[in-house]
Length: 330
Ligand code: NAD
Image 1: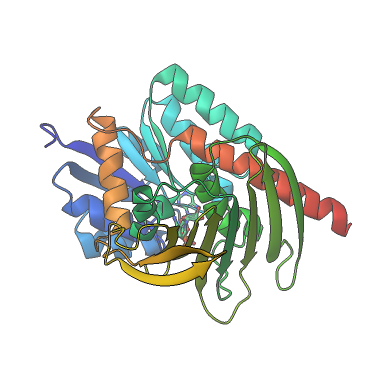
Image 2: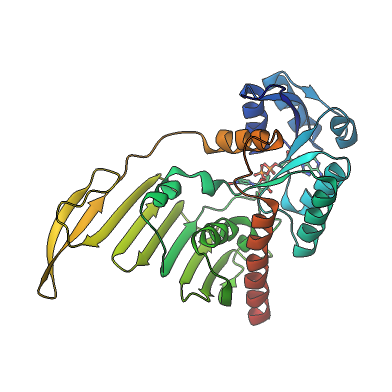
C-alpha cells in the first residue's frame, strides 16, 4: 500500500489517454491532479467525464505533479517527455518510446541524470496469455507472430513497424535471452505514405529464429504467437487471451499447470506422450495493472515491467527493420 499517493497527470486524452485518466482516478495509490490535451474540445470532454482539472499548458500541469503519462502521437513523445524529465517528473510513455533511436537515447541519459523513471506502455507484457508461459520452461527455437489490424488513422504518424510490430519485437526480446545476429525484412505501403505491411525475420546468436508479420490493413484483428522448441509447442492468442501448450514426455501421468490432458502417441518405437494443457488464465485489466506498476515503481515498491531501456532495445530492432525495408523498396 502506497502511504502517500502519487500526484499524477495525463498529457493527451484521446483514444488511449482517456483510459489512463480513468485508471489514475480510480487507483488508490494515485491522485489524478489534471490533464492536458492540445485539442481543447478533447480535453474538456475528459475533464467533464472524470471531474478532473483541465490545464491549459504542459508547463502548468507539470508544476503540480510528480509523474505523468504521455499518451500523444509518437512524434511528440520526445519533446514532451524531455520537458517532463528535465523538470524531474517521472514519465510513463505510451509505446513506442520515441520516433527515433537518437531521441530514446537522449531521454534515457536525461532520466539517469535526474533519477526519474521512464516506463513504456508495451502492454502485451502484461497479457495473461503471455505471462502463463513462465510455468512451462520456455526457451523457444522458432517463434512465429502474426499481428493484423483493420485500418484506422490513429498511429499512422509512424510506419507499421513502430505502430504494431514493435509490440512483437518487445515480446520476442523478452522471450529470447540472446543477442540479435541478423535481421531480414520486407514490406510495403498500401494506403498511407509509410509502411503498412511488414515482415521481419530475426536470427539470434543462440540459433533462435523469429518471424513476425504485421499489417494495419486487415479485415479483422489477429494477434497470434506460435513457439517451438524441443518437445514443446505453444500457441498463444493475445487477443482472446488463451494459451495452449503441447509438451512431449515419456510420462503418461505428467501434469502441467493447467487442465492437463494427455494424448498418447507412438514416436520412433518408444512410447511417448503429448501432454495438452490449456491453463485457466486470470482476468484483469492490463492497463490498470501497468499503471499501478508505474505508481509502485515511483514509490520504490516495484520495478517497471517495461523499462526505458527495454523500449529502446525494441526500438533499435524496429529501426533496423524499417531501414532495411525502405532501402529495398527504393
Ligand atoms: P489519439 O490520436 O486518439 O490521441 C492522441 C491525443 O493526443 C489527442 O487527443 C491529441 O489531441 C493529443 N495531442 C496530440 N499532440 C499533443 C501534444 N503535443 N500535446 C498534448 N496533446 C497532444 O491517439 P491514441 O490512439 O490515443 O495514441 C496515443 C499514443 O498511444 C500513441 O503513441 C500510440 O502509439 C499509443 N497507443 C498504444 C497502444 C498500446 O497498445 N499500448 C494502443 C493505442 C495507442
